Figure 1 (cartoon, one colour):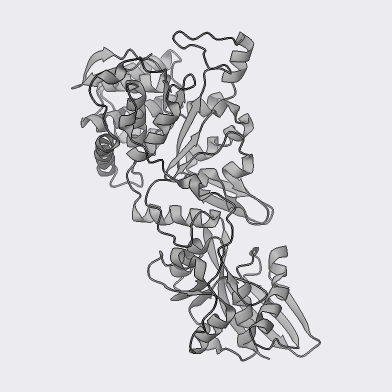
Figure 2 (cartoon, rainbow, N blue to C red; figure 1 turned 30 degrees about the vertical axis):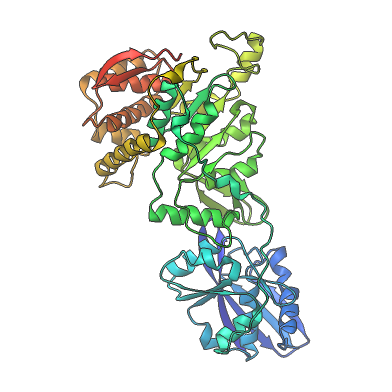
Amino acid sequence: MPLAQAWSVALVGLEGHLVEVEADIAQGLPKTSLIGLPDASLSEARDRVRAAVVNSGEKFPDRKVTIGLSPATLPKTGSHYDVAIAIALLAAAGAVENSRLHQTAIIGELGLDGRIREVRGALAMTLAAARSGFERIIVPELNAAEAKLVPAIDVYGVRSLRQVLALLRGDVIPDEEPPRAEPRLMSESLTRVPEVDLDDVLGQHEGRRAIEAAAAGGHHLYLHGPPGSGKTMLAERLAGLLPDLSTDDSLEVSAVHSLAGLLTSDAELVVRPPFIAPHHTASLVSLIGGGSGVPRPGAISCAHRGILFIDEAPEMHPLTLDTLRQPLESGFIEVHRAAAVAKFPARFLLVLAANPCPCGQAGTPRGICNCTPQVLNRYRQRISGPIKDRIDIQRQIVPAARGVGDGDRPESTAEVAARVRSARDRQAHRYRDTSWTLNSEIPGPIMRREFPLDGGSQRTLEELYADGRLTARGLDRVVRLAWTLADLEGAAQPTPELTNQAFQLRSGAPLTELTNDRPIRETTNR
């Protein structure tokens, strides 16, 4: 009985699993069966493959055909198995030598005329094939650019089933009409890093200090203040302070974006930390990921190794905002479905921006608030205490005083980014023998045991904890933030003054600036 095998890739989250596509042609009435836990879109592959094979000038077997997808216990979803199914079937029919399919993975969706359409997640699938030792992968031409980002595997971009057959037979590749890119469901502008500079921000000394510390140590940030005070300006300029992604991080982020449909046909590795700014009306699924079949990554995973900026945070549904609790601690999100559990990376820097009240004037200089105490309390409680407790830096941003731009030129993004890079280099050296790279990542018990503070700093934190001004989690976060400030200052260890400033950044108290480890003055920007 004719039998042949081809290989494709199944994705569960970002984890790729090699799938063996077996085709068996036996005696019996013409019928095509597809087994191996296919979903509805994959079950329709029988009709797509039949039409594509016939319209490509090949003969479809007029006998009983069984297509098996192994492992059978792994749920299969999507249309990217089409080409592998067609090739396995034609190999079983003798149209292709089965030996030519050795060490070759195949992905792509078939059109009824034999064209091969692009698919999502090609980069992640290519990574899975390369890690499994495959030497070659055949992908749709529109996905070839992103697949070629993976080293150590040969990538062949094809336009049609006829080209795939010619490639496997060693024939001349026929010319085909260039493929047309499908419209994308997600906007590519979601990942655009704002091209703005920090020297546009006049005054705002406390806000500038806050975003510098956040960038240096990867600390979450909460900015609140009246409309037009500069919260969004500061958040957008925070993206420019982050260093480029490492090669491993760049591949991981690019794989997430490929699965989300954010990479274009001329894809390049994502080298800059992404800046994702979902609207405050975003749904729960769009934020954390999900959807029918195998879940897709949401905004928090697209922001992996970058910034997730939520403007008007109190206007977001509280239950949606509270789903950030677990990924803020763990750095990943698990989306559970009946068929599978998809795990996506989600280690992002969270930036929340909010008005102080619905009218935006509560607690601001010269502002007249018209909100009742009940309305004010309800508004502030929309960002829950557990979420605020996971945020390292809280700053009130008020409009800069008139004439503030008459003094010295503010520091540019390049100048501050250089200090951020130096601070991150110090952290990388300090944690070189661990799996962590940033102060915000290291667990509190290890930080206290391996990198203890001096006696004066420790006494200060113990008094704040005893007074109830710090929670146990908050104490650990102040310690991490103190180390970040020390790294920015080039100090070997946090001083009591730096530890006090870390508490001020954490609690939202007026900030005391430091020069040479000595308080010089409190800023007037309160």
